Image (cartoon, rainbow, N blue to C red; front, top):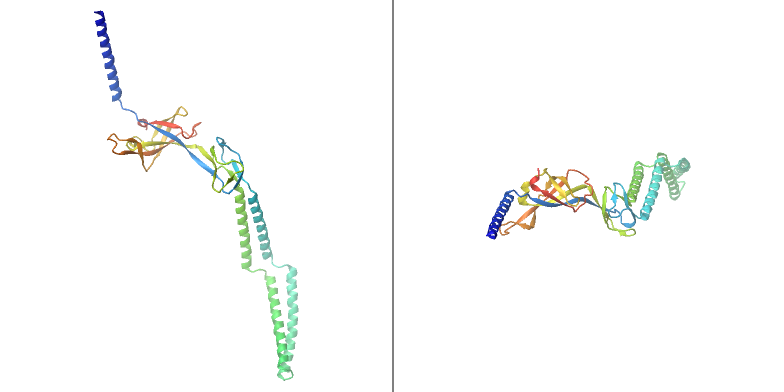
Length: 331
């Protein structure tokens, strides 16, 4: 009899416990379920490449090293560029000398020599002119032959041409170079200067300096290797430019709007940070990993949401870390 009583009491207790469990399950199921989604941390990544083809002379940083803005990261051998700079310097020196000579004109000794030549040719012309006039009178009186007169006339014209040429030389020496010659010489100097600036610019490019601060995540070449123009030598991530990317199905986008903030748990650091929704991708992608309950008649499209932490420079934050967000707590 006692055993029957104990059994009855046990059944009643079991029924009570079962009823309480069912009520608890119903209460939990009646409560709204929070939508938790997982995203990933991304950071801005830059490739530092060489503008010049050549051989790597040295690299100052390796993977994991911290790089500051303006640091010298690597150098390309500069023997060829130095030769180009020397050639450009010589061309500039030559063009400058030519321009100076054109502006200054001929030396005083050259002008004096041109003047004396003109005076000498003038004297020759005056003598030839007097002789021509005398022979002309004799020819008119038939005292000399036509052949003799033609010879005298030829000498007279030749003396006049020589005097005119000497006078032109003297005038040119006194006036100096023409404006067009000066402009041409000045243009040669300008061209040589720009060639020099170009050579120096290429020389400066032999040492690559980082335009950003960050961490070296990849080193592609080693000392002594050849690189081509534009070939990346190292990749650097900017730890101050970080964001989280979250792929949400289209039917969950109503939970968030651009400008909202929400808490995200960064699992790699074990901390919770505040993020702001910056933008939602305009184009959608197919999300085959989740389909509707209507016998999977169509796939839900997903949109990429970009969230930026409101606090910059989160210590030890790295790309690839997972972040979970509660969409129902967005505000």
